[in-house]
Image (cartoon, rainbow over all chains, first blue to last red; front, side):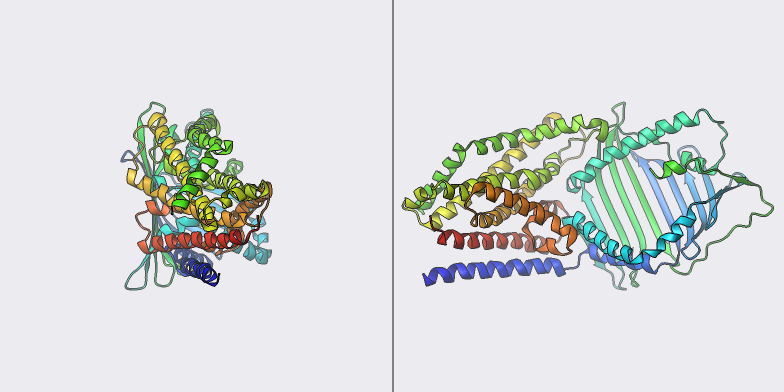
Length: 312
Length: 249
């Protein structure tokens, strides 16, 4: 009898200890995910101003559909942004300068001398939201737990390599089969939404004057024609990769994101769409956005007719 | 040893004679097709979901989160509490097999049943892809497919060990079923509330097979996770045995 107890007792003891030990290793082991999260927190919390260089490319079967290059200076203190965005599509290319200040936004296309001004009325409301910081802190820590749980075992697929100077290289590479079914199911929904939006836009725009030169609209048109990428059949995320460089000061310096979709259009031709985004942050906390002086310039006020649709 | 194989054969036959088992086996053959039909009917909302060679692995998530845990709870309810409440456990114990033999046979048969279910689900999903798949949507190596299903089997068997342990506290099948479903959903929800719980809970490893498909996950991580699941399996099987051994029938 005693021998039996010894046997079962030791089996329980050993397996329990191993379980605890391996669980603790997983718990204590820092994955690339934790490194990335820490850097992201550090960057967003301490950030007051930054220069952003972003480059977005959309390709269909290897040929360029649209490309956007932007160089933006942003400051948190006075909520100001300034910079240029260059958009080149299949047919045309254009550069837009924009200045965003607390009281409104100013847009100007390089092709003309007209400044478009859009006043923001609901900014005031945003300011008031600062009160509930305590609730916010609790909420953000809770949200973090939820996000951690949602990411689950994908956490382990994020790798981190530390360079000689203390900078870190974070990368995540997911193939078709590894992408959770929920995310995979969202891909067709996104495309469906896009193609519906393009229909909507076409029907509303046909009634208006063709020479609408509001840059915001031009911006949209030349960004890409949603019809170009309207995949309707067998839409799937083929691969997804994320790459980030974290500086020795634990700030995110560079962020690359690539996603590849495959699918067929209404004619049954198969497409491989590749979207990639490359964002580089520099001059962290050492950037001053430019401001624009509108006196003596040709100014056109723009009404907020898109406001409702932005909040969709 | 002879007693054990006889006990396993006995338990297997018992399991096949239960209607529930047959229903679950049928469901697992039909489910992949049903899911495809579901995706087709959801087309107006979802658009068309592609059925690609990775369909068996994508659907594995649904199998390991819902179908197989439900299957094992139902089977465990029949293997332990049901046998006690209907006083048929005595019959098994009267045979020239030790209590350990009876217990091991029950647990092994459970493993075999889970294995068969996974095999059926995998085969049916693969066939579904061959029949309804969208052509030209990439490929998945058959070896990675087998790896994913083998990994899913290990996590499911460890989960079964946890439920076998829980089953020892129940004398009625219904009570156990309700409690185990609550326990399972509870254990699945806790990680959303408490940080770090997921590392110590077997229930959060139902989708760990995706690690085996990765190129980047270190072998160390794979080894510790495998070790975690194996030790969890041994721990709960042994704990379950301690209670099973002391049980008065």
